Amino acid sequence: MRKRALSAILLSLAILASAVAPRVAQAVELYEELPPPRTVLVYPPARPARVVLVSSPPPPRTVYAPPPSDPSAPRLVLGAGLGPMFTLSAASPSVVPIGHAHVGFAVDAVEFGVRVGFAPYAASLANADGEDVDTGLYTTDATFTLRLFEDADVRPVLGAGVGAVIATPEGSAPAAGFGLSARAGLELAFDFEDGEVGAGLDGIVTQVVGAEDGFPWELGTTLTVGAHLDYRF
Image (cartoon, rainbow, N blue to C red; front, side, top):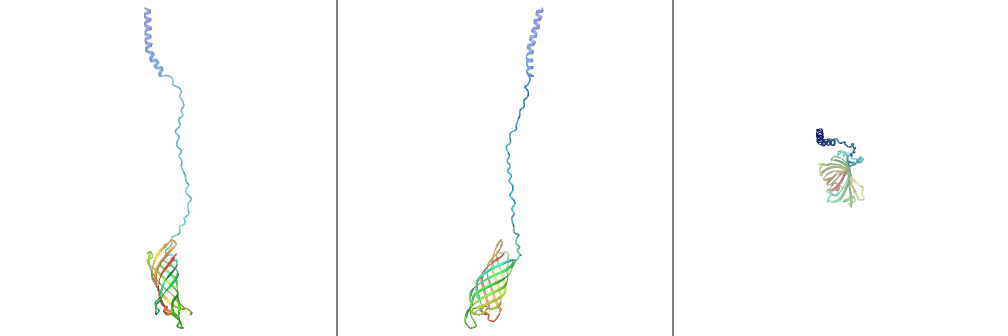
């Protein structure tokens, strides 16, 4: 009886051991000891280098700007002209070349100046002995000129003057007279940075109203038609 009881106990223990053994093994496997921690260094990826070009600005430049010109400021005027002169008071009118030069100053559309005309051979006139001699004619006038429509490209020109008319007969003393002149014409203007150029055509009538003895009255009335060129700056 004892042997059977002992065998039954051993058998029960064996069955119990076989039932518990897998669970014990599984528990041991769950709580298996982990390896020690390791330090891992992680570096961020390198960024591409950023290149910034810094250029210094150029040094400042000093630019000279001339002050705007004052249209009302006086301007110096230089000019010259050439054309035919008609001797209207002679018994037989003639045509001879005459040149002139003038200088003056202009304020806006008004110009004041001095004009000198010269015709070395104006006519062939009889002297005191009745001989025909070559006679020159020279004029010196103080002039006043008005240019209309100052902003237009083509301007009417009006003027007047007073001065001396000098006749120079060959072989005789010069004789002078006092004359009045009137001028009318058209002028084409060209503006430049430093001034203005005017080119035009005009007619000038000169009348001697008084003269000294010996003045040839055949030259007392003249008409000059010519071209002129002025520079105003």
